Image (cartoon, rainbow over all chains, first blue to last red; front, top):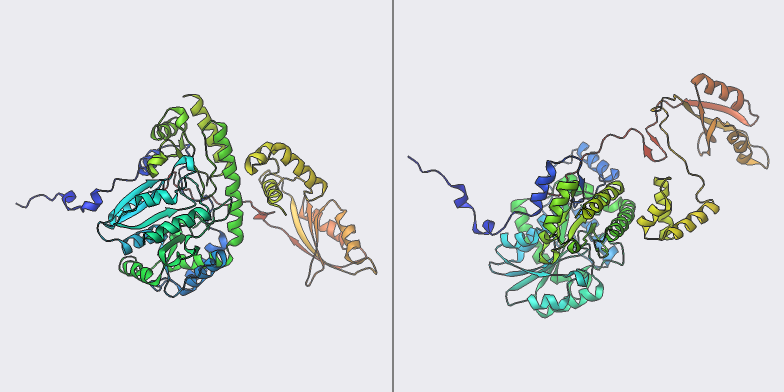
Length: 391
Length: 163
């Protein structure tokens, strides 16, 4: 008689090191509830602009359903290259320095895997997107987390990064404008960080997916800083700026050696990004500026509405200058962020995400996504007010 | 145009009933600043009127709309302005536009029945001295009015939490 199989015995060690995402719990709780107002979605509430959808439909109608180059359509890479020259004055060769990926998530995974040997340390600045630490673990690396603190407007300093660097450090991952805090970081501060990166001969992985959603000041592209171009892997995508989350369209830009290594993994796993989505991305870059401007202006209004509303409720909220997240402190209520978010969902049907899911320094905060309609934001604020008054 | 002015105009264009307090919350301006700015915009005639888009069909009022294209004979020295002024004074005429191309002017007329609109065009418009010919197109259905889609299908629902 054959012995029974125990599938869990076959799971790799690295998988066992990764706990499930804390967001999952709220996803499951919210799924069963009616009349839910959600501030839990990191996704624009706009449908992709029609001209982008129409370009995709036209492309399918004309039979464009094939594979593309592993790197992505050359027309798309050329548009991406042009957009970076125009916005940041930094040039990437579309032939060998740009790789089109299925979402920034894939680009991130490829970037980490391309440079990480087992045991290499990758510094992850938190609070940050929940995929950074698991991606390092999956690649066999060791994530070293450092926390940007609320008292410093959730900006990491060069000194804090330097203190975490060891002989094994390979790279640092930053994300500005930041998910979940909405923090941005200035050029001077990034230059100080660049000095540390050069001094210790390591790399920077910069996730700029929220770049276009910058409301105050201008976004500084890390690779545009002097001497940083070949030390940086730039990650960017179309999900947030052009409201194209479901298209899974993104790209990485770096020195040819890095992009080539990333492409090798991409070639043997994803092969290439879907052609229809790539056609949509070309249209977005060529003709999408006006729509981006409109969306950014509307997010800015919602930002002021929610930040002002949360402060009025006594939930101290620092001023987020980018992305579409408010990150209020709920410490004054005496509850942990997890207790607050869970009770708020059960008692008032409002979904928010506890800040500590994104890193220790996010404890005592909530992530409230304001990529929701103004009516929903106002209703959510009313319900949060009722909840806080009842504590 | 400065950013504050653009902000206020866009917000009001979307919802004319919004109160200054709400505009202040959305723009970070004070209520007084918003009120002053709106007053200026009204006086400067940049804000021309606060109107409501009504779906009369849904309300049970079966108004008939027609778009009439006109070829006109211009009067010496007066040009198109003179005929435009004659046309826009009729309450049945809802819009008057100067066109390029085959026709000179397009007007939109509203009436209670096709017969009423047809008689109005035949008796009041076609008989004007400057009007050489008319082409009447009755509107069968309006899908979009002033940027508002009137019978938009339901949007796809987003998940409550990002996966």
